[in-house]
Amino acid sequence: MRLHIETMLILPDPIRAVIFDMDGTLIATEAAHHQSYALTSRAIGWPLEEDVLDAMVGVSRDLNEKMLVERLGPDFPLARFYEEADALFYATLDKGIALRPGAVLILEHFRSAGIPLALATSTMGGLAQQRLEKAGLLDYFDVIVTRSDVIEAKPSPEPYLLAASRLGVHPTQCLAVEDSYAGVLSATSAGIATIMVPDLLPATEEMTAIGATVLPSLEALRDLLLAPVEG
Image (cartoon, rainbow, N blue to C red; front, side, top):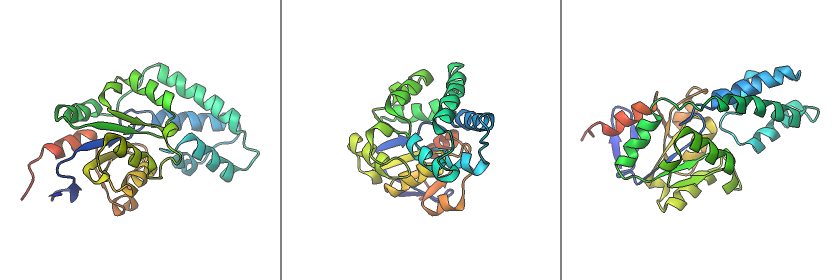
């Protein structure tokens, strides 16, 4: 293991594989989800508070459905909410999927270094493949793990453990890149060195306490990886 003193980030040495989250980390879809949920909830007369919207970030649909019913009760029109919110979301995506700044830069960095890449996402299989293809990122990944592939979604470690297993690399030899609390919990509990690049949710002391290192951007991660190691 080597230590980058300036960030106190312990990286595997060497990094044998990297596992990325998708929404909010590589592609800028979390904001579109957030907006569609907020607008729809107001339109149907059940406005969601900001803390509820934040709790939905980085979490699979089935877990969010359970959370909404628990918080809002059985009268909440769940099916109508998702039908209308999905229509808004996909109307936004039809206009094009924006990448997070530095997404191609960091993926090209690892590809040029010959480091295998995996994706671990809370999005269902077919939707994840379509989203990656539309964003022009599908061909970067050797392994893709979606919500369809696991029993327990993030924040369970299962998605990251499965991605590492399919890569044939021990978790301690991997690096994870995430933007959400659920994702950071998933990756760190799998024993993977984790970088958090915040999107909608700010970094918290809890995130760093459980082992995540926070960086402002994917470009900053590339710069860190290129920096000389202090002896």
